[in-house]
Amino acid sequence: MTPEEKKKYFLTYYKWHVIIFCVILIMVGILIRDIIRGSREQLLYVMTINNSEQYMYYGLMDEFAQYAGIDTDEYQLHWDTDNILIENDTDYTSIATIQKFASYSADGMLDALILPEEDVAYFEKEEYFIVDLKEFLDDEFYAAVEDRLYMYYCSTLDEDICIGFYLDQEDRFYEIGLYGKEERVVLIPLSNSSRLEYLNLFLKYMGEY
Image (cartoon, rainbow, N blue to C red; front, side, top):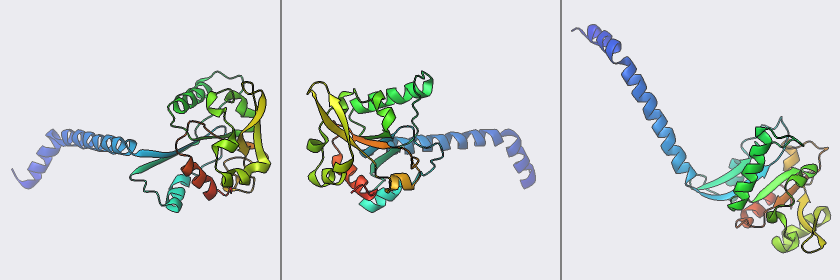
C-alpha cells in the first residue's frame, strides 16, 4: 500500500483503539498523581462554614506555603471552603457538612473551624471544642486575641471558657472576601490537633497577630 493508503487503513481500523488507549493512559496517570499527592503528610487543615457565595480565592494555601517555606510536593495544606449549613435544613449539603466535620475531627485531621457566630451552635457541644484557649495556645497568640475571645459555657466545669476568638475585620480573612464585613466570624482551634504550630504560623500570615 502507498503511504496514503496505509494512513487510511490505520485510521479505519485502529483509530478508536489508539484513542481509547490514550484516554486510559491519561486516566491512569491522573490516578497515580492523585495517589502520590494524597499520600503527602498533612500539615494543616482549615475548614470554613457558610462563607460568602462569591468567594473565589483559591490560591491562599499556595501563597501561605511560599511564605512559610513549605514544599507542597511533600506536604499537604487544606483550605476547605465548600461547606454549607442551613438552619433546620436536612438536605444532603447540610448533612454532608456535619458528617465531614464529625469524621475529620474524630480522626484528628481538622485543625481549625471558621464560621459565623450564629452557626457555632451546630458544633459547640462537640468534645473537640471543650478546651480552654488560654491553655491551648501559646502566650503570644493568646495575647493578640485576648480582647475578642469567644466564650462558651462548659457544663462539665460549670464555668465559661474561651474556645475560640472573633476574626479581626481588618485582617486578610475579610480582605479576600471570605466573609462580609457585617458578619461576626469565629475561629475555633480543635483540641485534638497536633499541628498547632502551623495554625499559629498561618494566622500570623493572615494578620491575626
